[in-house]
Amino acid sequence: MIKMLGLLLLLCFTPALLALELPPHDPIPGGLAVLEIPDAGVVPPLLSYQNRRVMTLRHQGRWWAVVGIPLDIKPGWQQLERSMNGYAQAALKFQVRAKDYPAQYITLRNNNYVEPNPATQQRIAREARLREQALNTWSDQPPSTLRFLKPVSGRYSSEFGLRRFFNKKPRRPHSGLDIAAARGTPISAPAAGRIVATEDLFFNGKTVFIDHGQGLVTMFCHLDKITVQPGQLIQSGESVGTVGITGRTNGPHLHWSVALNGNLVQPRLFLP
Image (cartoon, rainbow, N blue to C red; front, side):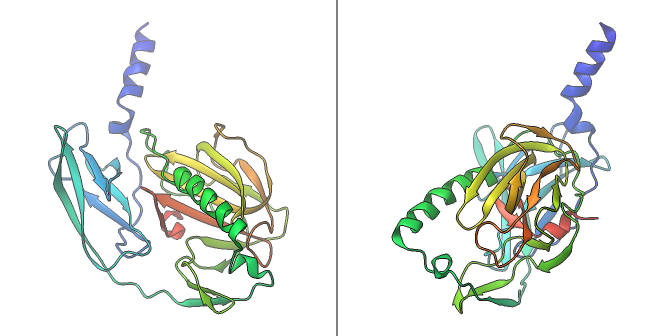
């Protein structure tokens, strides 16, 4: 009975006992703001950014907020809000620095991936809602780590943040990190988590979403095979599928995205 009571107490206070290694503070578009929370007690305050919950973690005896910054944000001051007694109040401020991402020009044979027909546009709109819902997943349990494993062995073939032009037409910036690998190469979970969804999307192809806790979600695109199911718990290093060429792609590779509080950020910030 005493052992069981001790275990229950440990589980109740797990968030306060965690001392995760924090990622670097890099407040640029698509980067992270890592901010110490002043005057925080045993339980951290409820913080939000752009009306979304913000990750709060214990590190070296202090509470910290780890905030994902949108890739399309303008340089300048940003603000977190603190919820107290049902009201939102200004809490923490940080300044976003400018970042000039290089351009990338890609030629696609299938022009429907550049200028989709009306039927395809309807599919894209429907899938965009599914994708946003998965990337905005929130669970209260903190992540087991903020230092990810590289999900697949291979070279980095396309960097995060590139300003993209498909068939010379401007499109959204590259919101992930591409890793070139042969078709069928195993893809591993970069950290423990829960499978939020598996989808076959027009642009992203066969896709897997993993919830790692407190708004930290990873996305794996263009898979050949998916080897997990929604709701499945997965450990770091376990297989989620294999590299493929599904969706909008010119060759086999993994497109790996990391979302924090719903914003797609630089995956390299979570690698050792």
